[in-house]
Length: 401
Image 1 (tube, rainbow, N blue to C red):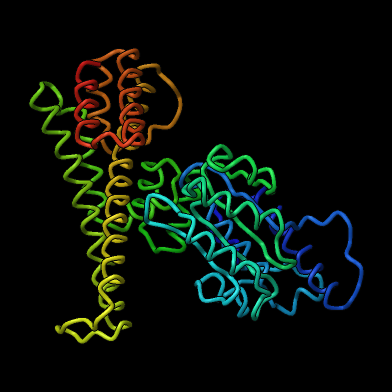
Image 2 (image 1 turned 90 degrees about the vertical axis):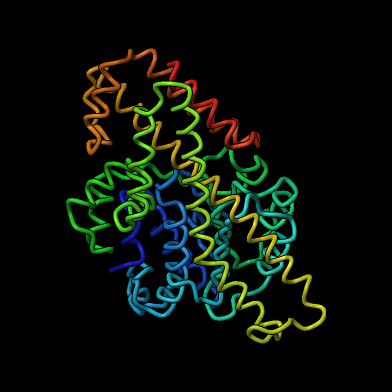
């Protein structure tokens, strides 16, 4: 086992990161020994990981962070950093290493205040490790102001600080920032590779693992949830029934409302798992007593937490709805493949009867218009159109074909 084991189907990226980690180790050793630095190092202070959702961008960044902190004795003998067993690797991977900060957000954006806090931390020397590492999993959610704050830190980094930014594409990051980063592009992992990791790491039944990997078209996170969460399977089944339930206007409106309700329930369930503990932890930290009143001066902190939880719920609901739209796109993609006699693998083989019915009752041109309607719905929600209105417009367009 090494730190790279969870990086699925990304052999080229793994090789590049492993080479950089080895050069990084040599750089730290040279500085410690007072030796001159070698030219042409594969290590740099800022990295930008891009790739489609589910490709493993953040997994690659965390694995690289662990390899940079590796303290295995084998390194001195020419071994590759990233053993997976030493204290540096282990604590980095489980999120407890003092010099590895992983930033992820459940909110709509990352603001200036949070980014300034990160930049201040990035100026510190490593406390216990070999590098100070900042992993930002959602760099595409930086506001313009936050991006400008980050730019200064990326332009003039501390000597042993490494920034690792993750985003779906280069266009999702400010040009001034991406021009100062080394780019690594990840591709969608093969279905077989995703199924293998579900079987090996999560103990999923092989048949279910292959079904989930195929249905999610190589998206590792969604495949894991689909394979291990009965609620996720039930939600997906309901979404894939939509194309058969839009025969009239009433059916369109009902299907739209049910998609919204499903996303709302999903967000509520996820919030319940987190909000209660967060609230109780904050009350305890502020000196509150269970079942009693809070001390004076703490109302502001409690209100701030409530606002954060509300924003996170909105983000979760939007993400859940976006996932449903992605699954609808996949359904119509399979329909189009059947209509054109394509040899590409069908993702939704578990609803083959529904695919055949829609394929036989429509034309390829209608299917393309339906895919465009789903895409238009996603774009409308990006522009903050009310979700129900956007989804109702979509279902009506799906009916019209």
